[in-house]
Image (cartoon, rainbow, N blue to C red):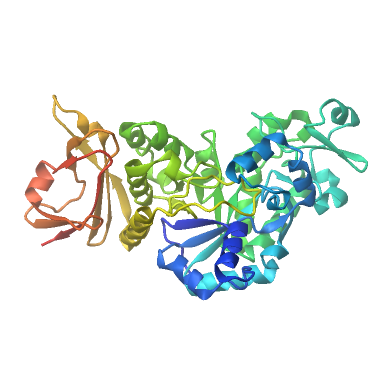
Amino acid sequence: MRTWPRHPVILEINTWVWLRELGQKYLQPVTLATVPKQEWDAIAAHGFDAVWFMGVWERSPAGIEISMRNPGLLDDFRRALPDFAAQDNVGSPYCVRRYVVDEHLGGPQGLAAARNMLDMRGLRLFLDFVPNHVAPDHPWVGTHPEYFVQGSAVDAQNDPTSFMAIRKSVFACGRDPYFPAWPDVLQLNAFQPGLRQAVFETVSDIAEQCDGIRCDMAMLMLNTIFERTWGARAGVKPVDDYWKSLIPAIKGRYPEFRFVAEAYWDLEWELQQQGFDYCYDKKLYDRMEHGNAESVRLHLLADSSYQEKMVRFIENHDEPRAAVTFPSAKGRAAAVATLTLPGAKLLHEGQFEGLKTRLPVFLGRRSNEPVDQDLAAFYARLLKETNQDVIRNGAWRLCERSGWPDNQSCLNILAWCWSKGDERTLVIINYGQQTAQAWVHLPWDGLSGKEWRLNDVLSGESYDRSGSELQDAGLYVDLTPWKYHLFQVRAL
């Protein structure tokens, strides 16, 4: 049983689209079972620890039919794919009909073959789990209607966008407490004991097929949130929370299995306490997009036990493409930051190439876009140089920085460091639009009395500095907007 690194790097792949484009590349249909070996080698060459195959489960024909009657979704489809046709809508991967790998993608055998190819290259596999809702044609609708939040005929008549009549029952459509219901999915009842047992069996089956799950909108299943959303319709609130019951039970069988929460609303700490290994750090994403360096630094002052269980990203399938949100030099500075922070790091297929069109998850193909070759080369270098044991398994610390009374540009500087044994790495970023100077203060002991070489592995430049100066005054830096250093620090 392999041990996970403390700070893994995960690649998200849109499985349906990826396989379609491989089929075009090799002029023949490609499934998870028949992906050419060189494609697995290319993924492994970047040094990822895991691959998340987004959207492998059987999709819902009923969900597709509903989505094709939604004008807002159809507008989104045409914005992303100007020549959109009905057959391009392959269904939402978050409208799950069954937790069985879709035959179009190669079925369960195809997934097993893909997992073996990844395992041979030292990579683990993540899949999706959607706890809040299922498709209206999920088998439980007929066999276990009690698993769902129920409505009445009056509800279905008065609020048809929030309730759906199927056979002799009326089901609430899935929702969160702040927005209208999603019309293509039915709401599971997190408080229902039978559902909880069925979910344990479902996740146990998933855990036989992969090494971890990304749990969609995980905070919706917290007792406090679910009660606020559904009130009396949910019934009696259980003593234990959903995740607090499920995660330890699964880990009792699969100790190395990992749970990742898509989480918002400042509930990340609560989800960590209930057993999640990692939670999305959307707050960091927002600060990096809209805030300044100081707002990012303040976020990183949180306790290390919290930091190490966050998922850092500047792109995933729910967010606009990083090439749009973090354009040009800012995007490179943001990438250096996210890949050198503690916790898990999530990258999205197409991010390296600078793709700009965010593809709705319903679509099975995307338009052709030019590849930004310079950006691809940058990411290849960055991934190579951050694929180091000191960053995957070392100790991370934020560095203080200071300026002068008449020059506070140091507030644009972000700095942190890693150490493991004799290995030391120092990261310094000017996360701002103006040139900045600062003294960066290193938290390492034993610098005095030696000469030190700071080798910037991204630029190729190196600097020799006195340990006594580093210990007493710090390291002086002068960086133009959005520039950065990724130093390997070694004694001479």
